[in-house]
Amino acid sequence: MADPERGFAIARAVTADAGRTYYLASRLLPVRRRRAVHALYAFARIVDDVVDGPGPPESPALRVDVLDAGLTAALSDRPAPPDLGSREADVLAALAVAVRDNGIDVGTFEAFLRSMRMDVPGTDVFRSRYRTFDELAEYTYGSAAVIGLQLIPVLGADPSLADGAALLGEAFQLTNFLRDVAEDLRRDRIYLPLAELGAFGVDEQSLRADLDRRSTSREMRRAVAHLIAVNRDQYRRAAPAIAQLPRTSRPAIAAAAQSYGDILRVIEGMSYDVMRTRAVVPTRTRIGHAAAATLTAAR
Image (cartoon, rainbow, N blue to C red):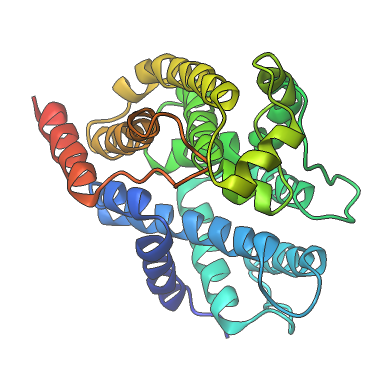
């Protein structure tokens, strides 16, 4: 039988290993809220790993369906499906506890899974290119905005902050897209809006040429600089919502926003050469963000 306590321990380990910024920020939260963050992150990571592979021998679409059924069973307090692994079942059991204890909207998981299916060839909703930010929003609502919405009750925040939380989730996602342009292109995905890139003379052919020579063209560097400005504006507009979070929750989110925003500074420091290397914020810098956020909240 699935064990939620074992699931929370697995979720903590998954977050510590794969989500270092989130893990460090979560340590600023009270234990109950921290455990819920770990469960949410671990579920998202498990599904994301299935979609991005390599993974089980069955197709990613089928495996996402299994996880979807497993989540439904866990939320209904029914036994896990037989084709769900024990580790996954434990994490889903922990997630179900977090959902019930915090009153997380179950519909947000439906939106998340829809976006994950958008990454899987052969599904009805598959997409690997987005022409405009409006088109991209169809994906990022489920992949990022709903994460912010899930955290509203976990953080004990006023529901009126939902728009700001969703915007912050989308800001994190765009930062990921800017950092991971090369990795995504290797998976035959382009998340940066093609119209935005095209305004600077960048198309898919030039992106692939950059990837092959592991160097970013001048045109693409200018496009990245522009998209960083767009991304920074997202963080700026989300800042008032962060400032209105409860004092017990504010340091964690402020630190995460600072650390993610710093990825943009690192990209600028490497002259926007996103095809050559992946931008990383050092651990000591992220610890500094956490300390500063804690001190600021205590004033």
